[in-house]
Image (cartoon, rainbow, N blue to C red; front, side):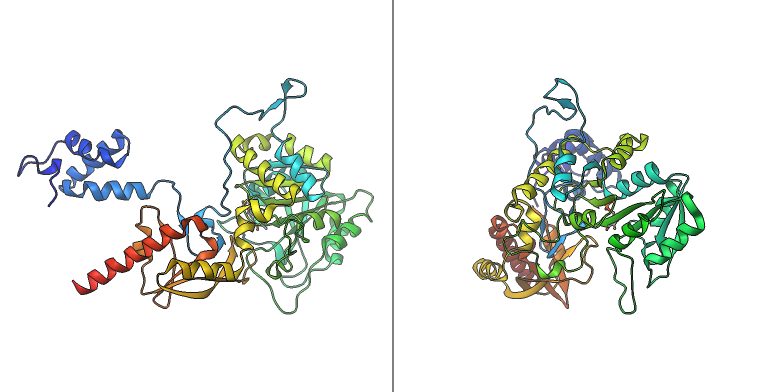
Length: 441
Ligand SMILES: *Cc1c(COP(=O)(O)O)cnc(C)c1O
C-alpha cells in the first residue's frame, strides 16, 4: 500500500486540506482538489480521492486520439484544426486601412465568398444559426416553400419546421416525401402570391431516399423564380460546406466518395441567391456557419439583431481565415487536416500499421462522419486486437477512442496523426500486456 495523507493518522479521517494537498501532483488547481477531497471524505472513502481526481481529469476538454476512422466525429469535435492564432491582439474589428472601426465579417467572410464565387458572406456560430438567421432576416412574417422530403431533422433536434417557426416564417409544404418538382414550388407561389417570399432547399445530409425519387434542382428553382415579377429568393442549406465539386485543391481531383454532395460554388453558379453551410464538416475548419451569396441579402442577414447574438469570436474567425486561404492557395490537401487525412493512400496507412508492430494489421473502412455522406465508406487500414480493449484505451494519458466490432478492437490509422503512431503503438502494447496479466493472474 502506498502511503498517503489519508493514512497519516490511523483510524481517523484525514483533514480535507491535507488530503487535497496530497493530490497536488495531479496539476489540478487547489479549489478543485478541495472539492474532491471533501466529497471523498463525505463518502467515507478518502482512499477514493485519487480515482476521483482521475475521473475529474477525464471530464476536461483535452486532446484525444481518434482511432475510429470517422473523419468528422461529432463527439470528437468534427474537423480537427491545427492552427491557433498567436497570443496577441488582432484587428478583429479594426480597419487597418482607415484606422477606424472595422467589421469582423470582413476577414474570413470575404475570403470564403471569393473561394466559392459568391458576392459576399457572413459568418455565425454554426450552420443551425446560419439557417435561423437567414430565415429571420429574410422571411419573418412571410411564407417559405420547403419540399416535404426536405423538412428534415438534421440532428441534435434541429428540425427545419421548428427553425422556421422560431424565425417567425410560415412553412408551406410542397411536393411529397419522395418526389418534388419545380412545378410544386410554382403552384405554391401561385396560390400564396407575393407572401411566399422564399424557395428553401435543405440538403438531407444524414439520410438518403432511394428508389422512386425526384427533387427540384437549384437551377430549376432559380429559373422558375425568375418568372415572377416579385421574385422569390432561392436559398439552399447545403449542409457540409464542400466548397467546390471539382476540388481544385486536390491534385487527384474529387475522390469517388464525394459523389452527389452539393457544393457551394456550383450551387451559387446554378442561381441560388443565398447558401448556408457548416464550417466544421467538409470545409474542414472550425465550428462555424457561413451564409454566402448576393451582397444585399448577406447584408440584411449581417444587419439583423440576431446576427449580434450569433457572431463568432476572433479565434474562430482566425481559424476560418486560415482555412479559406488554404482553399485559395489550393493546398488544402496538405494544410487542412480533414483533407490531409481523407487523401492518405491505403498503402501509406498499411506501411504505418506494419511498422507499429503490434496487433494484426488489416484493411478497414473509414467514413466521413458528422452526418455527411451517409453510407459512404473510405478504404482504410489499421490494427485489430482480439477482444474489447476500448475502455482501457480511453484510460490512457492521452485517451484513444477506438471501435469494437465482433469482440475485436479496431484502430483505424486514417484518423490518427502519424506523429502519434509511436504513442498509439506503446498504448496498444500496454493494454494488451495488462489484459494478458489479468487473464493469467
Ligand atoms: C449539419 C447540418 C446543419 C447543422 O449544421 P451545424 O453546423 O452543425 O449547426 C444544418 N443543415 C444541414 C443540411 C446540415 O447538414
